[in-house]
Image 1 (cartoon, rainbow, N blue to C red):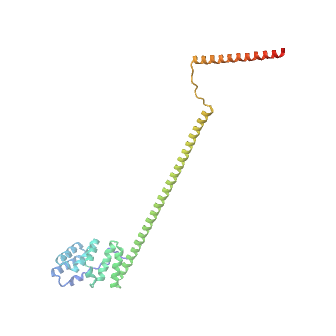
Image 2 (cartoon, one colour):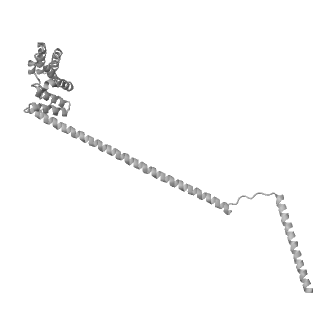
Image 3 (tube, rainbow, N blue to C red):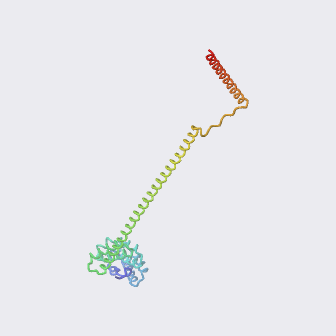
Length: 262
């Protein structure tokens, strides 16, 4: 397939000689001069001539169309496409409609607007089905459009997969965090339970020791004088008890002697 940048460009050179009857002769001279510059490859000078013609008659179809083609050759694709759009209504009903759509397709291809190129070449073929170059360009543009659509679809699928993976990772991380929180909670509960049990055991042990007397409380201290008084009282009580016992024994013996003698 031939290169899109340089081939299949239709320039309405002949149209300049059949411009609208309302155009002045000076406008036609500017257009003819621009056509000569265009054929010689002097695109900058040709663009100036076509612009002069448009200043004299802004409705000049030939000047607008040929200026758009010149801008295309100067690789100013955006302005070329914009200028072609401004004359679309007049172009599609003219005898040059097929060429107009063909060139519009070329500018769309240069801008990688594959959908626009497919639509333009299709319109060109509807008006001139025998244009082999338009058929080749149409097939090429349609193939590029399919590739673009497949690429966009793959990108969307990859984005969806990445989004799903991110969601799964976030979910797994949240689950791990929940598990760690549960484990920490259980560990803290077990530790608190063990600490409470140890404290309760220690408290019970202390209470039991106090009740069994295993840990006696310190005895109060008494003075030496008080201790001596207590000791004297105990001895006096003991002496009194002994004398009482002696008297009881003596009475028993006396009773026995009376019984024996009697």
